[in-house]
Length: 263
Length: 285
Image (cartoon, rainbow over all chains, first blue to last red; front, top):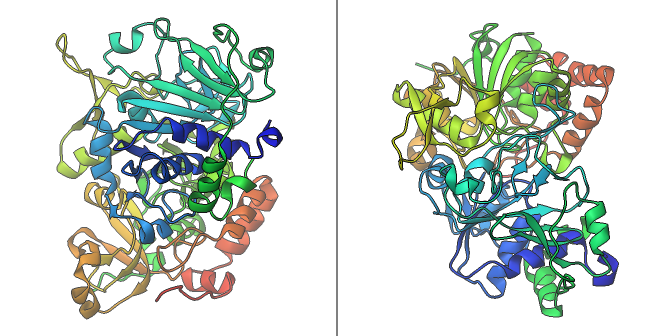
């Protein structure tokens, strides 16, 4: 897939996300988030010059000097326009519903209703795989206007019927259960993986295929997904990154090639 | 009166069974010199409340100092999952208090303000199921937003690392302070390691950097490269090779013991550790 597109999966996912981000929006970016930073800064360099993003862990605002680095890296202090204190940011995340327009997150598992898990695979008391924990994920998935999930490796263990531990609420049990249980509307908008782009069918809130990356088939997605993925007709092929997108990404956003050397 | 203490004297206040918080954030300002002293002193049975961290909680867990740990986020980011934390969680050898950012922030705020608990929105997660003591339901009227209460967090001791301080205990940061200030306000006893001691005059001339005034600080320990292998902003960057070596050593019990032996037990304190890692200089002193 990546060879056909002349870019890495990380670059492709950055471009796909950037296209969906809008000028003037406010976002928060967490840890271990090269793709997230790239998506925000690519959007800023293209159609969304006033997109505003803050490093969740570091507090730096709009760090953008053409190099992708961990968001809390102190070198981002030298290329940001403000630094917010963490407790101040927690106020915006937790108590001011919908201050943030979007968040972009990764996960160990995502389920058919877009709930995510970064805590553990298997039972919490005796996990098969212990993940890093929740940090701001519960609040961001619950309270930002929408969220995106980046899943660079699409497989049955990652796309599951029901997450083993729900620490990032998506559409909970589907249908209207998210709002029924008191969460604001919103939830997961898109899931991007190395196989395709996915959203959630508006009434059942089940995950469905929007587009497949070049060379990927519906069967291949289904074989690598632990639940029945909704398919409507023949899904289109994902629009490949344009020459302009790739040029700006590689020259202005990721000039040192962090995403090129990633998977 | 000077608040500067030797590392041994500073850490002597920590007794088995205490609740100890650690500051910093992932690979930023992990209070490693203080952590290494806990390992050297073989203090055990601690309840740990780490701010989202990496090698500080991981080393304490790997060295057997921890009975129960809070987990907001313990990660080695680009180096993978936290090796010793992961092993301990998967074998069930320590207790885990699963928490999220709102719960620790709400709990610390309540602790700092001397309130019995904080309030956070109910985000419909599984966290209350595995940690019912920290996430307690609150009665809400129909149509009212659903909330949870989180008990005040009041650590017995908090361990922090900052760039510099004077002998009065005015602590200066050249970096974001993360949860450090909130933790210092909530904790009963505050120990800070700093890369260098500066004069009181220097502090007065640059008082905007003093994020932790002396009244909040009980002990200051001089520890050049006291956050190593993590970052001390402006003074040294992440030692990626050291982190990678630590992760590698953690895969095997005897290799990890050898790591602890050479970098912790055989170094009497921060000065010896600094020498052990090759006496590097500060980037920007």
